[in-house]
Length: 496
RNA sequence: GGUUGGGUGGCCGAGUGGCUAGGCAAAGGUCUGCAAAACCUUGUACGGCGGUUCGAAUCCGCUCCCAACCUCCA
Image (cartoon, rainbow, N blue to C red; front, side):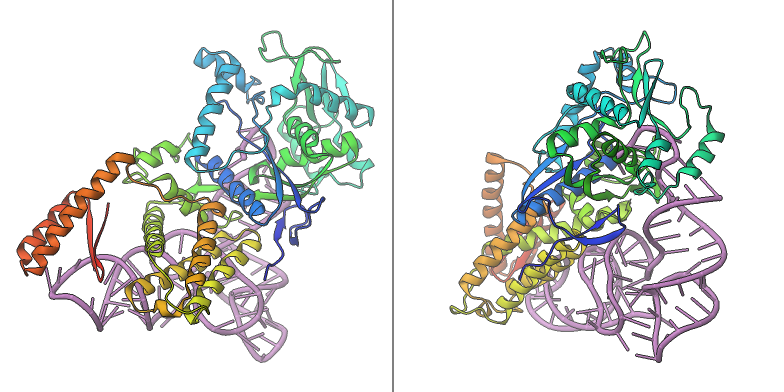
């Protein structure tokens, strides 16, 4: 019984049933990273969230074009310096070298988190022509003006001509914005403080520069996403995503630019992920309240007592809804680690099981099927991964009960178990994007398996002889080596 | 100050006006030579004050507190 996919649209501030523009197809645009420094853990959270959304849309049978940009033009920093060239000077590298270095690093990190690559990953510097064209269109439509080689978006003119739509996404009112910014800074070349640059004149020492009808310069803060989403997904497309902190001004201005250029607003559904906090506060380098993904994995940080595997972190992210702030803490990570281990162990147990019932599923088989369907249904409700996880853990309990004998496999048909296993596997590995990480690989792992088999056999012999001293000694020694032995009905099992 | 979203049991974290979210931790029990694991059972939770309602954590008002955004930021 498939349900409709509903999602929370930031634009309307309501949950809406999702209807793609073209049946069967979804155009998804997500604001990607600025590649001038190492990827931040908060970025990872956002991209993991959209990875799950991407995966789930595909699991629903949609053909998805997922576009996620790389910003390598840089934006102005406080002192007016281009970020890319700043990075270049500090690192003694070419700007494109810096961009490449951190793009590579970003891609590695996405792979580590098991996030699928997007269908198209356009770079801002590769779309200067499109951006210049867009600036020209906006000027032609009367929503921008040129001053000394820079072009500014005329927010007031735009707002008056388009039913006061500036601010519809962020809930801001133009009068309030003007009132504030008047106090904050001088107007400079802008006619109005709320106007924003869509093309900037390059000063003589600015490295990243391109020729344009307005002289040498570089594109403005928000233009790339407008230009690239339009190019690859069309003037109207389905979903635009990004972090909450991009809502204003970035996304608001993106809409203005789209409408300003071609009278189409771009995305119909806007999805915003919430922030990752640590100790209840935004991560910030300046006050030390931060941890890099690498530090989180290795445990090399004052904020964690040990390293956490990337999949434990991903699992941890799954337990919070993408629209809620997520608070990173040692205790929460510990809980995630244990929970994830329990999930993996149940999955392992499930692999060795066979349904013993007849052709018809018994009570337990039906419960398994219903629980799995419920988990999928939770995903239809605005990608509610925490609720889906709750349903999955109810299934974990049943799997363990089947293994422990509290529930009988006689209640599950062979076919029922098979399809349950397939469905659960699809959900865990394909949709939620988890993976069962082997502690060690290949030959080493095989050898260890073999050794453990021998050791456990010896211990089993000792237990049969009621030589508890020897059996306990073996177990204690193994425990000391980091290997846990668990005695079950079908013999002992072990885990690292 | 403005905008947006929050404040849920020891911790994390879902939530539909009335029915056990879930994970971790804790307590009791079953199983086990012991242990671990597993299974079963257990928690006067919903910032505060009012209101609507037969009934509110869930709706409304006020209030306190928190976070993000308003300047580049996922």
